[in-house]
Image 1 (cartoon, rainbow, N blue to C red):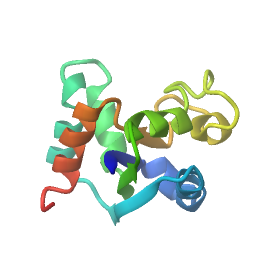
Image 2: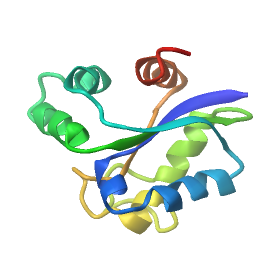
Image 3: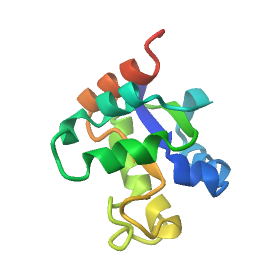
Image 4: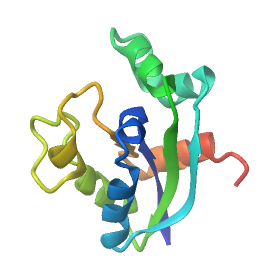
Length: 135
């Protein structure tokens, strides 16, 4: 099995959309290997968004992701699971996300776009190690 990292961000948790979002992943045939509702600390948030460090929106990203709880998961599937999940998520900008995708159906703001999914196999490995270091 191939695994990837997936997160329901604070806005998804606050709006009560975690069940709907996770059910879409499961209906696709993917499996949740581990999952946890947690509060992310600032150091983990900065490590997660390290590729954006130095950009004008970095501090806003960190503040957003630590403002309340998130639902972090390891999602498994047969092959290229990260790509399958990214397709389910839709475009980063909800205004451009196709209907039927998570962001296309539920998000309205690019700054609060509900979910995060790894964008490559390498990112999945890094993010899984960051959020589930004990494994």
